[in-house]
Length: 401
Image 1 (tube, rainbow, N blue to C red):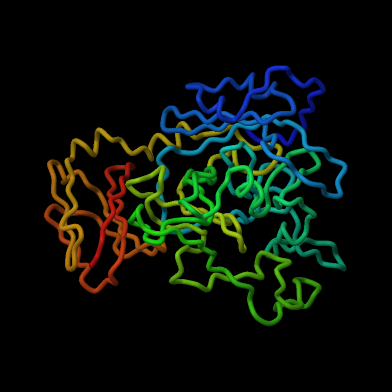
Image 2: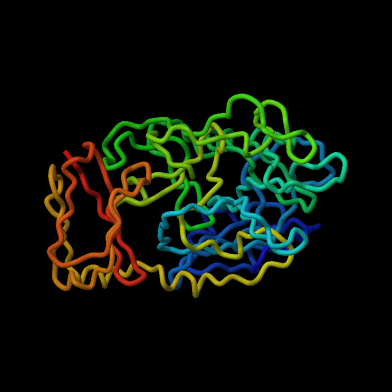
C-alpha cells in the first residue's frame, strides 16, 4: 500500500483496544484490526519473504502537545516495507534528491518509521522562493524544525491529520520508553533503507557489548559566515539553520558518518550491523541513506507506485544456509598484520568490503582464494567485513590490535 495522503477519520472509538505489543506478537498482521482500531495506537511488525512489513494507523502511543493548526491527529492507513537484510552501498542517497514531480510521486523520502508506527520526516516541502518571480529554488530546502510549530516531541500533524516527528521525540524516548543512558538504546524503528535506528545511547566500543555507554552527537555543524546568494535567486544572510544546506559535516573522525550511521553490535544485532543513530543535535535522524533499496512506501506524494519490496529484497537476503555451507572463518582475529578467509567453497565469495566504525571503506575488492588483506598500517580498533556471495551479504567483526 502506498502513501495516499488521504485522511481517514473514525467517529466511533472501538471497544476493543489493541496495543502495540499485542499487534507485534501476531505472526501475521491483520490490517483490518489495525485500520479499524480508532483513536488508539495500532501497529504490527511482520516479517516474511525477506521483507519487514510495518502496518500502522500512525496514531501515537503517547501524549502530544499543541501547535497552531486546525488539523487534529487522526488515524491513518499506512503500510511500510523494508528489506530484512539491507545491503550497504558506498554512496549515500539524500532524502532531498530532486523530485520527479512535485504534484505527483516524488523522489523525496520519509526518514523511516518507529516501532510505534509513527513516521519520521525531514522533508518540509518548502524551499527558498524568489521574491520577484515566486519561483522555488529546490537547491535550498527549508529546515522543517526551523519552519514548523511543533509539540514537546518535535512533532505535529499535517493537513491530513498525520502525526509525525521532524526532530527527536525526546520526551517520548525518556518518559514512555524509559531510555536514560544506563543501557544501550533499544531498537527505535527502521530507516527507509531497512537499517535499524537507535537513540543516542550506544556502546563506546562498537565491537563490545560489555563496553560503557556513550551519548553520541552527529558530526554536523552550522557553516560559518554568510550564504552565497543575492536574496533573489538564492538566499543570503547568515547561516542560521533555516535551510538544510546551512549545515555541513565536519567531524570526519567522529562516531557517526554523514548519514548519522555507524557499524557496531547492538542488543538486537549481537553480530554487528550498520545502523543509524537519532541524536539530539541536527540532523536528529538520518537525512541520507547508505542502503541500496528504498521502497516506494516511503516516497512522498499522492500517486506513488505500489511497493516492489518483495522483488527488491529477494536479491539482498542473507541466507544463513548459504553461509553455514561455506563454513567461513575470518582469521586471525584479533590481528595486528593481516586478515584471511578460509572455508569450504570459499571460492563462491564474490567481493569483500571492510569498513571502519565511521563507515569509511578501508578495503573493497573482488575475492580470490587464499587472499590476504594487509591491515598492519591501520589504527587499532574495530572494523567490519562484509562478505558478498552473489547479492547476499554477511558481516563479520574484526579487531586490529
